[in-house]
Length: 389
Ligand code: TGC
Ligand code: FAD
Image (cartoon, rainbow, N blue to C red; front, top):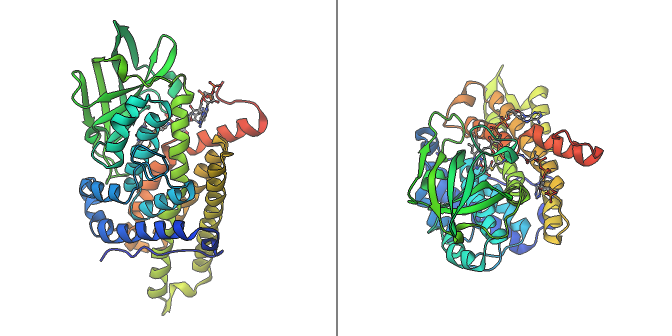
């Protein structure tokens, strides 16, 4: 039977949410419980993404939920974060799908696209009829995207694109790829549609993490693009990095969902599992683990709520997001590892959600800036000295 998604609100933070935000969160939780939870173990086991739920997710206004106009729901950022939390309570792969679609691909067009591009793509993407992916990472450039080797050269009015992007979520199911490339003036972005001659994708197999998510390589071999494919105001590395800020914001919230699911699973388990004639829940060491989990989840919730308020007020800095992504994902990963331990042998089987979350969170800790990269971003912020130079 699928695990039940439950709330965790030790500090009555619900009282700080608006009734609308709570309603949005509860509606998404019910949807995820009904439509996603029954099949998610199977998708993870078979390494398939539940594509059938895309139209339903779109119907709830989840895709690009915090963008305004162009058919997007225009929700505030706290509501958006709560949605990410509920998606990731089911599986990080589901939240990844929504993050890449809304915070990376749609946001890139929203922030750096022309009116024509926005009208052409955003409504269909909000409806889930067009799927997007975001190609920044390359085989030889992950943490240092500024070193990218993908290049576009001028060809008459248009461009010729060459290069390879790797580890791209939604890559082979995407109708359009946002591709970051170097031109003579520096880094810029292009919208490359599926089927463009010379554009091919290849899925990455053998992943033991994010199995219910498609991850691909994108290859561009003399791909001819019209001038209109370029994102006109995307200039320099800050253009893709601004998109990452949006996605990292959602990840910071999402990780709480995965941690919460692991906590509830471990709590239920130790209440019913007896060893030495008593429930495990009565042993001091076990209680300490549960209390540490509760504490870290509650702290992460508080960080996110404040982060959302800052984002809504327009005063959030990328470093605030680095703080939240680094802290919350690391905490969630530790919680998942502890929960796995508390379930004993049952902690390694797919019937319990814990091993799935634990394996997924290894990816979440790595993508969108590793734990160490965010340490260095924050170190630079507080000392003024960059470890990257
Ligand atoms: P740096 O000098 O730091 O920055 C260059 C310019 O960008 C500005 N900037 C930002 N702007 C907006 N948001 C941010 N987060 C920004 N960070 C920096 C900065 O002010 C500067 O502007 P300007 O006007 O002076 O030019 O560049 P650097 O080369 O030193 O950067 C180093 C570093 C480590 C910060 C950066 O490259 C980095 O973040 N690396 C990690 C790479 C990463 O996160 N990749 C993610 C790929 S996408 C992905 O993983 C999707 S996963 C799927 C899912 O989300 O579910
Ligand atoms: P590297 O950069 O090679 O890092 C390896 C190790 O070195 C890490 O521990 C890192 O912290 C450390 N390190 C790096 N630099 C430093 C330094 N200066 N000082 C100290 N330590 C350092 N990318 C996209 O563009 N789009 C996507 O949709 C996308 N989806 C992904 C989905 C999955 C499942 C995965 C696993 C990755 C995805 N990525 C995507 C790529 C992801 O963003 C990169 O994996 C990530 O940025 C790290 O890059 P890397 O794997 O090349 O590791």
